Length: 152
Image (cartoon, rainbow, N blue to C red; front, side):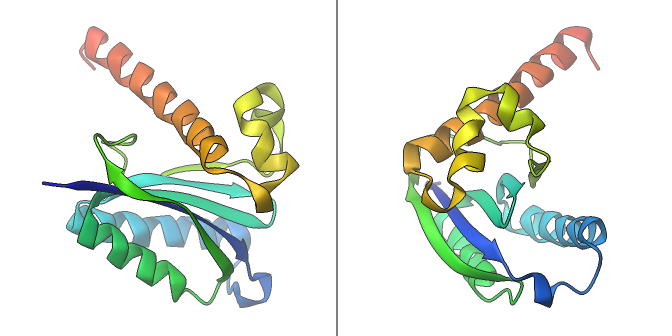
C-alpha cells in the first residue's frame, strides 16, 4: 500500500458559513471523520485567523479524492497546495482528523514552530508546515506512549 500525503492552505469564505463558527467546526469535523473512517484517511486540521491548514494521509486515490472534495467546498477559496508527495509513514496514524483552533494565538506564541502560522499564514513554506504539523504529531505520540505504559 502506497502512502500519500497532501497539505493545503485555504482562506475561509465567512459569508458562506451557515452556523456560528464553533457549530460549523463541530459539524464539519463530524462529517470529515465519518468520511475519513470509510476512506482510510488520517490527518490534522488547523484553524488560523482567516485560514485553514489541513494535512491528509492515506492511499493516493483516497487522499486526492478528499482534496477534490475540499476544492469544491463553497466555504473555502484561494486553496493552495503546500505538500503533495508520497510518504513513508503517517504523522497522524490514529487521528481521523486531529483539530486545533490556533486563532487565540496562545499556542503559537508559546511554541516557536507555530509562529509562522500566525505571522504569515498566506506564505507558509513546506518546511514550516511540516514543523507545525510534526509538533502536534509528536505530542499525540507522547500521549499514546504514556497511555500504553499506563495500560489505558
